[in-house]
Image (cartoon, rainbow, N blue to C red):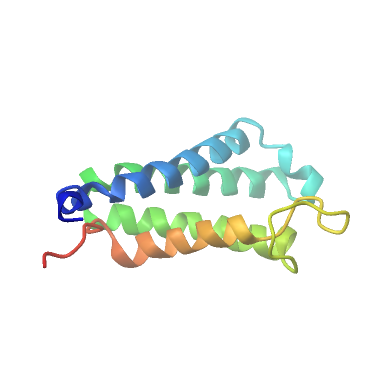
Amino acid sequence: MDALKGFSRYAHWGLRIAVAGVFLYHGLQKVTNPGGGAMLGMSSALWLLVGLFETGGGALVLLGSFLPDWATRLGGLLIMFPMLGAIAKVHWGRWSFVPTEAYPMGGMEFQFTLLMLGLFFLLRGKDVEAPAA
């Protein structure tokens, strides 16, 4: 396993790319279709705001390694708000992401994981490399 230690300082890129990919994709869909929240009973303004939080948060998490520490922390914070809203409004009451009749959008498993990744970036900031041994 010592051979892998040299790569540990780059491990944060896997998380950054995965989180950014999810939030940029979903955020840009909301920004380009601000009326899409009607099916969830959301106003166009709120739907657009969620899209901006997702897009901005995803971009800051991705680019935060090149920016000041606050950028990664802000990105983590921005993606937490939409996930809290999604859990509370759509997914609460069921854990499994598998849709059912009672939960056609599935449970909160995926949204909770994304929420915790946002918390990770908020708390850890730019310095997501493993500390030196």
